Picture 1 (cartoon, rainbow, N blue to C red):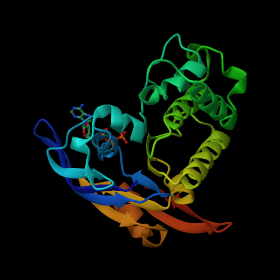
Picture 2 (picture 1 turned 45 degrees about the vertical axis):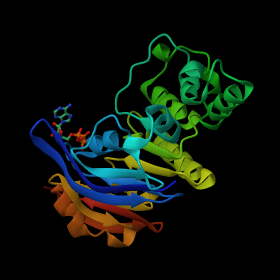
Picture 3 (picture 1 turned 90 degrees about the vertical axis):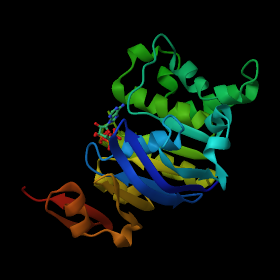
Picture 4 (picture 1 turned 180 degrees about the horizontal axis):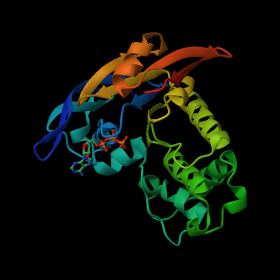
Length: 252
Ligand SMILES: Nc1ncnc2c1ncn2[C@@H]1O[C@H](COP(=O)(O)OP(=O)(O)OP(=O)(O)O)[C@@H](O)[C@H]1O
């Protein structure tokens, strides 16, 4: 499934947040959405997910205008992990099973339950599978929410700061897991990340938002110190450690 965004404009009332945003994402690609607080990253993700309606511009899924795709169909195609979520009184298993909802007609089938069990195993959540989500840590809950999005078996994954609440080991594990998932299932992922180093390590393409629009986009070869400094407003050096590019901010 190919995602194409053409000339997207979005405003909250009269305040423009996105202007002329155009890019596309292919199958098997993990694209990092980067930029300072308030740059419009979450707004962009919400437009793609049909939570918000852009003022102008078109979003195509495999050449089909998303406005002509029914909400239930969109829910089958797009898995979304928001920045905030509220689940009460549900077990870890049930929250992940909720991801199957767009696929379930009357009741969960054996296949639905097997998918949930596999995700629980893959994300190492077996020990808390039957625990209420009110009684797990913030990092564990973050993994559960990612599990719910994966249970949807989406063609496009939209992840808004998926490493929130995760410790260093889990940040690496979860992003590595998502990257492998994207490649193995040949789907696409758009990932909002504040940690530019995690983005450089795991993403194939990068979209930098600044002043309501795309400041720069491309693969790792396009990234240099000037772009990072102009997007984030901080002096940096870019070095390589074990062949992995690392951005080091200097004193402001
Ligand atoms: N519901 C809303 N109504 C009005 N303005 C909003 C609303 N949500 C966000 N905004 C504004 O739109 C702009 C973009 O917000 P958005 O959440 O998309 O940014 P972001 O890049 O995801 O930020 P962050 O990195 O802080 O999460 C900000 O100026 C924000 O204050």
